[in-house]
Length: 303
Image 1 (cartoon, rainbow, N blue to C red):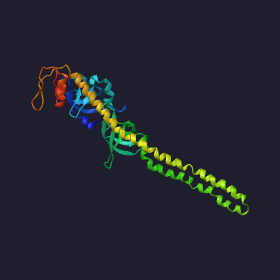
Image 2 (cartoon, rainbow, N blue to C red):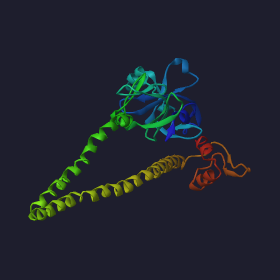
Image 3 (cartoon, rainbow, N blue to C red):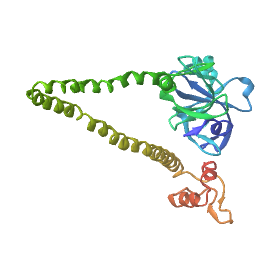
Image 4 (cartoon, helix red, strand yellow):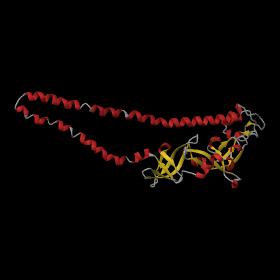
């Protein structure tokens, strides 16, 4: 998962041509589906019009570059008919007001978190007092051009305080118990006859049966504890997805490079040659390049 700021400004590298094709400029948002549809780029011919890369054509987004297969993955405005409507909408999300359906402004959207598949995972919202919080996309109903609308789930969380006064309505139920204790009036009856005392015994038993619901109050206390534990596993799942994505990206690079020839000598930092120009790239060469942190350099110098 990447922040938008970690994607914008990165060079676009063609791994088959070994050259830089431009720099990532903006994210083209598909607001309806909550995804990044493409990345617009800026190159030496920027004055000729918009150019973009469909997000599905991106091989990987690293710390230093965005890699694609070749320059054919870049679309001009004439060839980007499927994206024309999104370009017209020009929804950026960042800097829009975050507001609930009830009309409460939560702050301003200051950052987006993008998954490996291009899905917007969550938004960072900065409140007027400067504090920040993250809102998951399943809590957002609309990504608009000026406003991002938080769905009813977010409203319920904000309305916890107003709903609290309803609790006292249930409180009178407890005072009703003493009404059953009207039995003391019956104590006057025993002055007339002892049989009334016998009738009092079952009345005393009745409240005991009513007291049985008390154990039910204890059962819910134990239930919430185990439910909270699975939440801790979420980071592990995110880490596993990231690891799987990194492994898949590396595997694609490896398959692409195998059988190609090096365009120039690739050397370790200490001067030892990993592969000479014109030599075939083998598994052994890939392993050496990886250990020497020369994998990207090798990828950009093949023929």
